[in-house]
Image 1 (spheres, chains in turn yellow, brown):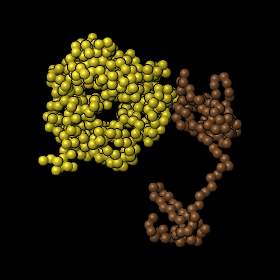
Image 2 (cartoon, helix red, strand yellow):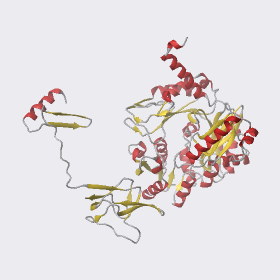
Image 3 (tube, chains in turn yellow, purple):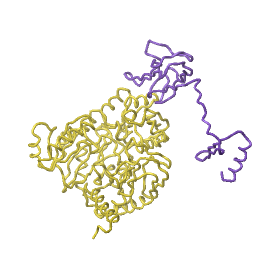
Image 4 (cartoon, one colour):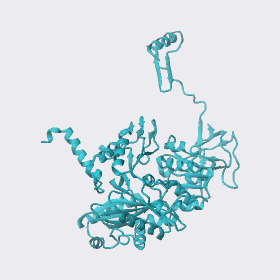
Amino acid sequence: MFKKILVANRGEIAVRVMRACREMGIESVAVYSEADRDSLHVRSADEAVCIGPAPSRQSYLDMNAVLSAAKITGAQAVHPGYGFLSENEDFAKACAAAGLVFIGPKPEAIRTLGYKSEAKALARKAQVPVVPGTTGLVQGDVMKEARAIGLPVMIKAAAGGGGKGLRLARTEEELNTQLLTAQSEAKAAFGDDAVYLEKYLGHPRHVEIQIAADGRGNAVAFPERDCTVQRRNQKLIEESPSPALDETMRREMQEAAVRLARESGYSNVGTVEFLVQDGKFYFIEVNTRLQVEHPVTESVTGLDLVQAQILIAAGEKLPFDQARAAQIRAWSVEHRINAEDPDNNFAPCPGKISALRLPGGPGVRLETHLYAGYTVPSHYDSLLAKLVIFAPTRPEALARSRRALSEFEISGIRTTIGFHKKVLAHPDFIGGDFDTHLSEKILETSHDRDAQKRHPAAVA
Amino acid sequence: MNAEDLKDVLSWIKTTDLTEVALKKGEDGFSFSLPGAAPVIPEPDLSSRYAAVVSPGVGIFQWGEPGRAAALEEGAAVKEGAMLGRVEQGPKASLPVKAPISGRLTKIFIEEGKPADYGRLLFFIET
């Protein structure tokens, strides 16, 4: 087992990984930018190294700086968290070249599974159903391809993620302009303008399967996570199990995910994402890293995914089998609390937290790097905290969510806590029958209501 | 501190040559000047100037290039832009440490082969 792990990340996920290290008796090293000098992850580690100025490119994304920090501290392995260098094939290779263990899959698996069109080809080979679309990158007669799939179609960046380079073409007239927009966005965000087409599903749910594989032939799938409550392809609420799945479909999805893991020779934890509509599921992509919402699965199964990930990287056997991994022991919901203003198009709201009251009590797990007096820097992701709830049943979990959100107070900056309360009050969410458009729907109705409050005379 | 205390301070000032007083304790503090007193702007001391040289990145500090240039010593004269050393990040990555101004190397805070964080103080140069 490793003696010392460098955590190449910041914020709540760095704190989460350091907690796992401490429980396993492993020392941890934090790296931080100048803007994060006062961040909690710096204090949560056994050692900390300043690796650069505030911009990510010159700190958390600077491979030489991260590797150099590992070298001077004598770390044996690097945990990349999520985002930053976590799905970077070159970084995984550079770790190996520097004699460090990258806590993640082999570089080849990052490449094949990370590049969406290659992942899709692999899924077809593993007999995992995919969304109908072009078999490769778009070149030649785009109109003909789009007609063959059937409009509307989604144009997607091959190297995409986070909603960048993603465009919907509803009609043939829209196709060319949307194609050009997607290509230029993809070029700007990923330095690669390759795109492909996919059939657009009008009312899908986003359901994903957590997997873990040890590269020794053991691969397991966990209960699904339903991440349907999204805004512009960014997840806001995740829950497990999904209110939309039955036992048969759950098993089919788990088996499909495991087939894909085996086909790609996967080792590490990972997530296979699907869209679900009208009782069918379609593979969309694989995330070859620890997911933001992994605590939902940990709450449902009672297992520790970060510790499993470290064990796998150290060459050990998966610590649980399929039957154990698939056990549903609770209902869990995660609320992502962001430093954003829901009344102003979710614009980021960094700043100083003047006062903080954290929720607690039964069935409440909080993953955060916040403390009173902390200044949320403007350079990074706006995630402040993940409020993870677990209870025996869904209604009890939702009641607990409401209770915990009412306890949660962050003063000094705008947050999305109020938005989560609105979702929990919405009949569609309570009923479990909703699709990925739910948050837009909630925002529209609440804006209408606010407008009515301001201009009561206008409502005749 | 309350108004009563301030009165005491004020009567004390009148027994001195002071025209202006400022006190700061943590976040709190006060400052006041006697009526009619001209604000006193201290003359900046320009007789010497120090420049701090910090590490441009995280890595191992080395003097000069391999096989060239030995360690500099305190008191050595350096020219603006001169290579003082480098911070090695790996087999193919090293960052130069350059003198921001010409002057004398008055203080050396790093040794050959020792690790440095980004922003760690390496030298003082006096002009």
